[in-house]
Amino acid sequence: MSAPIPPAIAADNIRIVDYHPRWREDFARLNIEWLERWFVVEPIDREVLGDPQTHLLAGGGRILFAIDADDRALGTVALLPYEDGSVELTKMAVAPELRGGGIGRRLMRGAIEAFVQMGGRELFLESSTKLAPALKLYESVGFRHRPAPRPGSHYQRADVYMVWEAPRAE
Image (cartoon, rainbow, N blue to C red; front, side, top):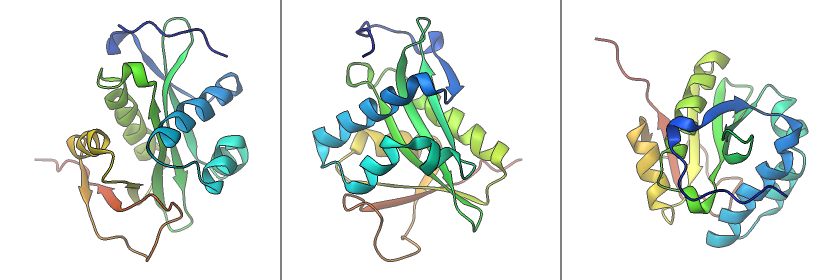
């Protein structure tokens, strides 16, 4: 179990790093917290959170963490590539006591940078209208609401589909 996180951590003292097995439990803990708070932890969540190496990393995906000076995981986000070149932004979570402090924005910037490095065709996410602050964050970094390209979702809670639009060069 990680040590308690002090309430006032400046986002500029946070570094965004790639997955390391030492943060595997934090990946699950951070995500399960918000899922239990707002929804239900679905079987697909338990599967992915229980074995991120197989379900995210083995297929070329990435998991990023926001880490403080004491090497504690404060937030996380994952990228899951598909065969068609699309990449799903998934499993975005920030410690509840630190939400609204800029860590999510840093994670989003890191995820977009990682997506560009991956050479993906399209970056998308599925979310819920219940998560208004998250939707505002996604919109602020360039995600736009779109109709879902296929019926249904692998998450029962998802009722929002968004696609990232790269800023246009002038």
